[in-house]
Image (cartoon, rainbow, N blue to C red; front, side, top):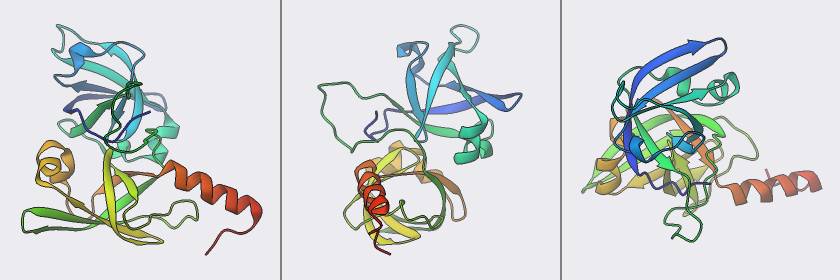
Length: 204
């Protein structure tokens, strides 16, 4: 489980296809604190650390994305040199500063607007229509692993506002109109909608 509060930025150092899987070598100052088998969210996608590079690649580690992950996220568009948002799993007993995030990407959206207004930034995002993927104004959404509050909401779109700190300390500042983004919708909302769906009373 994660909170959507980004700890560190990493950089993709190497990409190695392996059958239907892809290995990503990532450099980050967070690497010396990691252990093999730990879960780390990369742009909101939970991946397992499978190797630590030590002296070969200072501050480096490796994670592997399987075909299912590549199909459901935008990891397949990553290139060497890309900056990624990193967050380790939440600690039991610590403050939950963001919201409950599983690191399971629900959908890939597309940025439709990036605008600056008096020191803050507004992002608008479109996503495929699906009855379990809903947002509500003032609700939570995870965008590339970042916990954000929804401003405007519709069945296939939403907008969020970023404070300067988030702009400066995540890779969202690098996004442009048309870029793909990993989305994770609020887990409590998904459970409620699934229950209503099973009852046959899901609102349209």
